[in-house]
Image 1 (cartoon, rainbow, N blue to C red):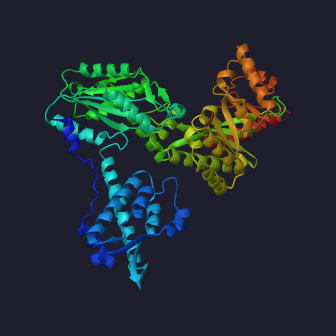
Image 2 (cartoon, rainbow, N blue to C red):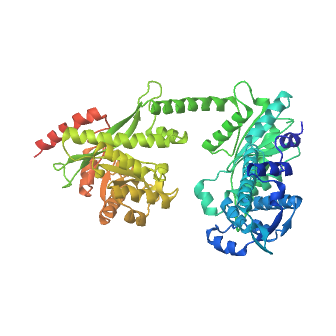
Image 3 (cartoon, rainbow, N blue to C red):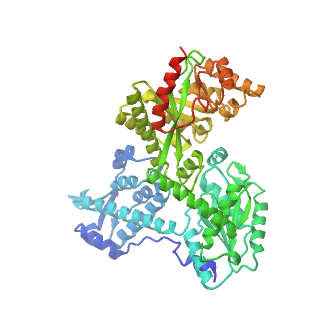
Length: 587
């Protein structure tokens, strides 16, 4: 089997405009025109162009179409007219490929006008309007034909690199397996996160082309390169002689990528991940060759191995992971996820007697007979990875507002709930509107909802995240900065953001009895936050000695097992009046 011939039999690479003279005549008949109706005198109207110039989008004004119209012959017969229209349409497609909007061409074509001779002079023909409509129709047909070609092409090939995609690859693999050829498949991921890609200041197409050029320098005639997706490629080896041949190719490419990729005004060294599989070690009855290669690549990426070859153990690991992830999504869809509340106790006078509970943090929980001890972080990571983030955050915000409303109504007191958001949430322009709708639905004060974020949440796209944060703040909600001191602290960020609450991470708090260094860190955070007018919450407070040290430091609020673990709403409604009763007895 010749891979090259197989691939190029799937789709014709060359686009040709399909408009014969008969096609044109048939279109003209729809407008009650025949060939003789459009034979006559044509003139380019420069004054018309000046009138429409302000309506033409720049920087792609359809220059090639304009050039054709300006050189349009004055006298044409039917054959010449067909040729002129053909040249016009091909010129338009060149402009269209360069990004010119169709509107520009439609406007400019108004400048070529069909005239008729009257009393020794010329005036607009009564067929000019139909001629203009005909040109509009033809330009639209040409655009649609090219769009359809690009659509068909993109189903089998990547437009930027010209490489066949995974659909073509899978067809070729199936053909080869039917012929009982041994194959090797190697997947490659460039290991570039969005932040790193922004820093190198290059577009995806330039990066892809540089990568393809480097890889192809190291391919043998019996191999073929495929485009899988952004920063991901596949190499198929036909007639593999022995399994180690695939390892040798991967090693050669690893060495090749030790040299920098030449980019425009830049260079980049990447350390890609590789996942491979051969038909020597592949059981077609369980997973396809491509699926096994994907499993190997994913295993390499999560374990930070530069190369991983597939074996059955990998399938077992991912089978268990897949089952868990499916169970988590099913729990979300069936409303089986629960929220627990952990009290946040305020110390207005920094002593035990003044302690009051006016807020709590909402924490995610999942009770399942088989999957026990699954952390909230694992739940949330899975939900977002599987594409259910928007559904989840809608449920979470609505649940938080509902819980606040129930607590306020039950206990007849002001109360606020803290809700944790993640990085993708802060990039969602629809989030402020969602929060506004939930607040209105449950009729709670906006200040009853506290949005908790971490410093690292801002790093993905700080400008966009800050826009969403400020819009939420304008609703009246306040913000808490979680795990302060563990991330990418920026005093400017803390000063300028609408943060009212700073939470000291429990990794510092838990050891302040025994670690003078941790005590100094916590004290510094408290003093810094107070100097900026922020309230401080200490997390992870488990005993009275820790609490006493925090009160000495003038810490404002306490969260931790000393007062209570997280609990269901029902248990919280019992705990809160009991706590208030105990506090009353201290006076």
